[in-house]
Amino acid sequence: MRENGSRSDKRAQNHNIVIITGLSGAGRSQALRTLEDLGYFCVDNLPPSLIPTFIDLYSKAREDMRIAMVVDIRGGEFFSDLWEALRLLKEKGVKPTVLYLEADDDVLIRRFKETRRRHPLSPQGSILEGLRDEREILSDVKAAANIIMDTSDLTPAEFRKQLIEVFSRGVKSQKLLITIVTFGFKHGLPLDADLVFDVRFLPNPHYVEELRPLSGKDPQVVDYIMDSPVTHSFFTHLKKFIDFLLPKYIDEGKTHLNIAIGCTGGRHRSVVIGEALKTHLEARDHTVIMEHRDMDRGESGGVDK
Image (tube, rainbow, N blue to C red; front, side):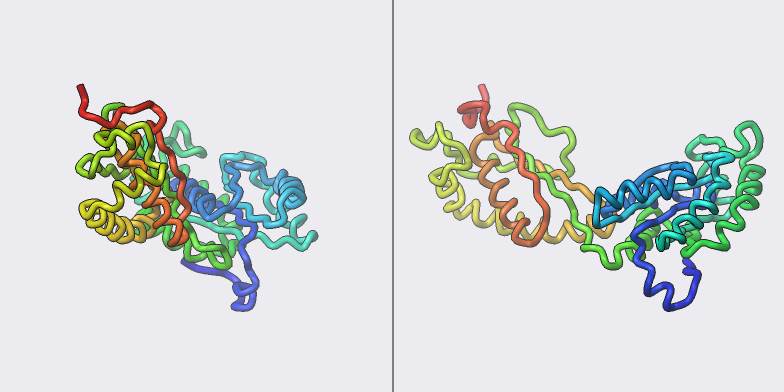
């Protein structure tokens, strides 16, 4: 990765407005998705002539303006308007960061073949010819770019990590959005779960007459389940396991994690453990969404018939 410009320029660059460009297949789409995860408002394939107007409109609606947009040769003849757009922004005192992505021809050709895509400049011809034409068209843009990244030898995770290191400067640290879904096995597994925990071995309030009509959100049920030594031991291990996993998922570039916790009917045990895990994670500054899928289906925590 190379950053063009003087040392003072780089310190002053806050990356509030990022123009992503470069060679087809070099990672523009992934770069845009990464910046979106960092809180940028993202636009793909915006005609350059519309950039100044778009930034004006967005800045009036949002004070904390952070915009990322992909501008590339898919815009055809409109791509030449990029220089005029940059000139107009400069007159307004706006200094966008131009991120230029490139890779070796053999790497780009392999990526095109893997995705079975055609190069936009050579839809009926060879990929290599399209890449050569594209390099020539973009040569001036590359020379003017603030940041040049070669993705030839980068895995998707390594590429994402480099982007985060550059564009998260001055931004609140990235958080993993965690969804906890409690459910009953008799009603089916959540299809989008990343992790599934079966808590049917915990004490079952269904067999306590006064607790049966209640749910896992009622204090009596919470006390009945959480006071058990088995529950205490399990939840201690669960917290340690989740606390170990979350940094690994974040390092891997994961932005959403769905945790499913199930008991027989989804009314008592799973709800108690789900709520306890939510409290634990929120205390560690994680963002958690809670969903009790089957809690209101009725008294269904007994043995399946």
